[in-house]
Length: 404
Image (cartoon, rainbow, N blue to C red; front, side):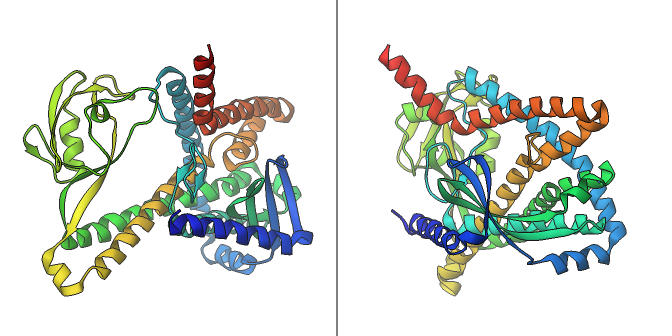
């Protein structure tokens, strides 16, 4: 067990201890209790700052809030289509991979693994941006914020920390729909903006610094596409941690270089891949996502070495610190964009679900609107659960097939 995983389990222990010490102040929000639920600890932290922020540039904030509504509904449509497409892919293509899963700091089948220190920093900043934005827009419209605080998603034990702000729900429901929509959209919209700010920093600052520090010398094989089918690269005998340095006698130095060459390859085409170990003669398969494209079935990452002049001047410490920050910014981008968009799924109590409910009220009146909203929410709850549980469903199907 590596240090990252050990720290993750220590952190879970700390969350358990916190909940136990403050058990009399904890409010339980049941989902599938006691299997799945939120534990909430209310405070007043940050409420004064939300007030000050809301009063500083009210006109600008209103324009941003209205933009958030547009982006929110656009994101809802995109996420709905992607979930439906992903579900179709899972049931029709054996090699398809689930597009939704829990983000956790330890390796669990069916979940997205993020190293602990990246995970905890990213989750903290993500939750801070998301909930603070909800609070600022609520205060922009003079809606009372009753509390802020910490929340813990529990699967029997606390797994993922979060944060929340609690506006006065009665007061909120009495406001015009555009104000309510602004508040619901503010959190996901802020996460999406934050993700693209991080991406801009990576492109404008990290990329030129990286070029000054490193030489790029190939792409590293980090794994193979899972599933019932073995794909060409693995079938040919390629292994993890081999360094791809050429395709059909053309040199490969970067991931972009590799992708550009592979985009022109078709299924059943034979290619020669050169690695630091040997040459592989490979006949390409069909891509699960595009039948006209050739497919190797490998996961890759950029490989690089520190330039000699940098190594002599600064040693390994400075480049290693730089690489760590590149990794942090990468996960800040991925998690803010991914979780920001997921919050726009038209599902029950999350932001996208609450936006959809208001839209249904406007289109079909409250009673009929709620019926339609509940039906849509249950459909997307099913799609999300199938995506999250798909690796386990696959194992059950294999067991049944094996039994018969």
